[in-house]
Image (cartoon, rainbow, N blue to C red; front, side, top):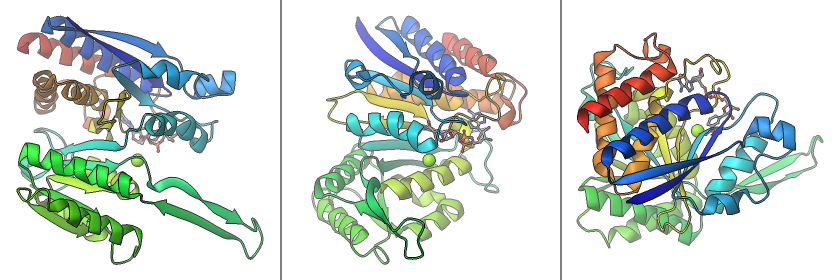
Length: 356
Ligand code: NAI
Ligand code: MG
């Protein structure tokens, strides 16, 4: 029997509340499968840990995480600890240190999910955004000169390496080929005359290796408009770190909101563990009340199963989320219901027992 080892970093705010439900779901799937088992090891890292110990994770934290098959992350960040510390010393440290250069964010409108776009058939919002996750605009390279003086100057440099750009674009082409989908690159070559011209050139270069893949290319401003006006244009989307960050929040908004948005940080070579997370933050405004929506965290379990090659179970989870959204009996307040976090998790487990 295959044993998967999952490192759990529940983190801050609603992180532990929603991850408890995701773990409940994965534990039950493993039991019902009869073919694999899952061990969870929890790490108490995050802002509370920082306030006690002066660090977001242990010194040998990365060493400890290395041996796992996946990392399951809740949310990090809480009032009292600056966001650049909490994000930089934990989340970004893991993404960079484990070369998780692909950020996969499904933007799929499930039946029953709320959508602010009027009368849109749900099949018209069904895309997968492949966001560059290791460099680009978030490389954190720059300078600040003459601070506080009238001649103050700041520079923030985008870093686009050939290796980094080729590998993310090639990953997206492979996905498009495998799933027989179109591939759209989103960039901004008309204004960013170095980085995005380079991006566009590489996108065109690699297209020669994939004559079977239908491709499109959009400027990011036009793409933002079409995400709202005509989202069916997009199937597989590949874009840079910053554009991907913004576009996927827009995507989350048209596909049911933050309570339903999941993301995976993938190291495709599998040299290091990949990390699965709901994309929302610690939601301090509702933390501790048992009202957070666990469906995004549960959706990220579906991504974890897909990554392990257990796609049948990954798909079952999505079908169950859809059923819960359609039935509207047990939903958290963000989706118009009155149920608590644990009740939604329990309902997913109940439906799993019927389906598997
Ligand atoms: P947020 O995502 O925590 O909250 C935004 C809004 O969405 C709030 O009204 C919140 O109540 C709601 N919301 C979020 N998740 C929800 C859920 N599961 N169910 C129901 N409603 C939910 O973003 P915000 O407020 O900008 O950030 C709060 C903290 O989280 C900050 O410290 C920030 O740095 C951190 N953060 C961490 C992220 C991560 O760990 N990946 C991502 C985004 C923010
Ligand atoms: Mg974001």
